[in-house]
Length: 185
Image (cartoon, rainbow, N blue to C red):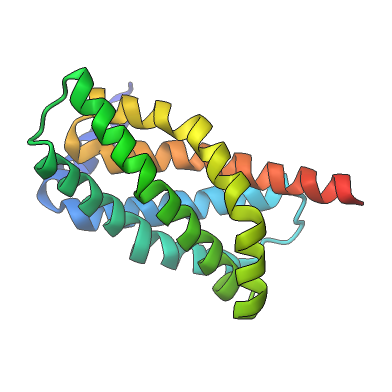
């Protein structure tokens, strides 16, 4: 890594340790914006939808960053910072049975109500239709990422690791949604 990259990483880690919540909030916001720009281009949107990007930024900063920060703090307290295989399995199971469905539900509701400006009745129908397949797909992918996160990643870096994996997950969901739309045509 070049000296400029090392300096930037050192500065970032310094901010992360001095101001963990603020840094995770900003990181979550930035990554969801980059993800949305990439997703819009991947699904063929010619002109970037700036309002959608702003609404995703708000979601990342007000929900994803704080939720992830406190989730990992709580899991560490519950399991007293242990990283043996049995404890990691329990963390992954607890996370997958609680926060994973909750996060997918919240995102689908937020996206429908706030970004797409649908009515509650429309959003409820869409969540009822799409949530099971989204969550099932998540359970096929996220436990592996969660295992790595809880087993190998230091506590302060877990939200950032999760956000980076979520970046890929978001691209996958957008491409999947596009292919479902194309196949229905």
